[in-house]
Image (tube, rainbow over the protein chains, first blue to last red):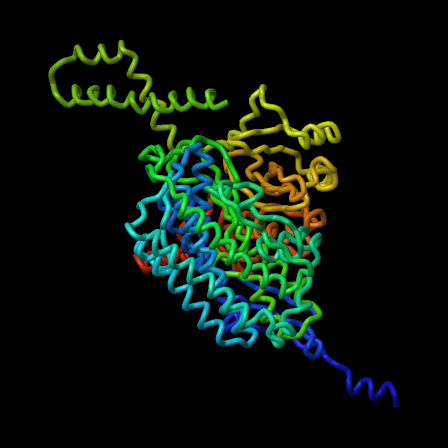
Length: 373
Length: 247
């Protein structure tokens, strides 16, 4: 009798397909979940739906044309993609970038970080059920897009940097607008905190969800806020300073528990640190040229290099090989932070409920344009 | 080493300049007049120079330069430790624009990887990137590249393994779990013969894809654009391919 009833209530494994057309997968990510009831037993991550072959394309375009291809990878943080690429080529060519250009690049990169985190905060909160934050965060993101539009004319894919410097100097009065934005943003971060940080529902949905230890996160190659959320001190801006970051003071927030709530707190603190960097950069903006001495026809000497920057998602690295005779790179490789963070999804998700899967995709902050390239 | 490179560039530039004296040589042939100009050009030695010039462009690069470090540059402690511990494993050391690279044979890769991760001086606990580059004319056409970083010691190194098309390269997923997807992507794009990988499937390309897109002999444009330009020609080619496959 006992075995018979056990057979009656035996649970079968259910395979659930989530995506690629699912609103909370933030693009075209497909997850094949193996469920026991509502618990996730295993997950297979399927991607490549927006693979455009940017690496292959770049190997057949010249060095300047590639800048606009990098815009299309992490399309919510185009300026940091530009920065990483331009710095890598500058390293390969041993070009010195003027100080003013490095300052402006830092301002653009930090504005971009705030914009990217605004988008993350809005969508992540909406996935979990807090609709209001989405509208608030997008309101502030809009201000940054306006600033970018005034600087370079585009709102999403900026093409805002050149190898050796910048295409444009700042429009007059722009720095005052950036200062005004920093003042607005200060109070808005407080507003987000009031909405979420002590919210009981938010705490229950994020505390203890998707815990990963520091050594595990390091071994898995996580980067950016997910790695710092586990208490690992790793920020490319501090460890291997680029642009003008070695001239500014800022702190690197670290988590203690390594759960979704810690990763949320870190990104909120990064808002404040970014504002702090922007204020220092705008106040100390030096005068001078914005373009270094770069030959008209770019032809780096034969050689290879890898250079990484801290994009809003984590360590964005470029590996570029030049054969020294053609006007395009021989090998162009992007180390995409979203791709490496997405690799951490499987260990995070196993054992959690289906509803938490949505929260965990959000906490990793992946952009599928960058995962697939 | 930068100085070494510079004369090489000059040499490459000279034949291009030599093109200018070569063109007057053509004009006398077209105009009936001076036969005097011809021997003059030959005497100046311009004639044999243009000959190797057209050969140069089609010749694909033979491989990365991998320049050795200058003698007066001090090697970092982790490289010294690696060479002491595994003297046979290090084939060459390269230095370029501040990046150190060790070139190791595929058979010694796992030993080197474990040593670099576990040794106290090196402690490369973070695998930033795994990728490859393809240099087809070379016998060992692939360079498999591992970009490593040490979070504790804050330094970088690259390991480079040269491999032929079928030569096995062991997977480093056991050493750094981060390499799992990165190696899958590398295999997907280059078709390097990876051994010991726990989950070797295509990751970005569709599962039934033929060929390895990042190889240098893989065309940039597929049939798509060709189909739009001349559909009949495309159909003829496709039928030809189908017939050969049936045979």
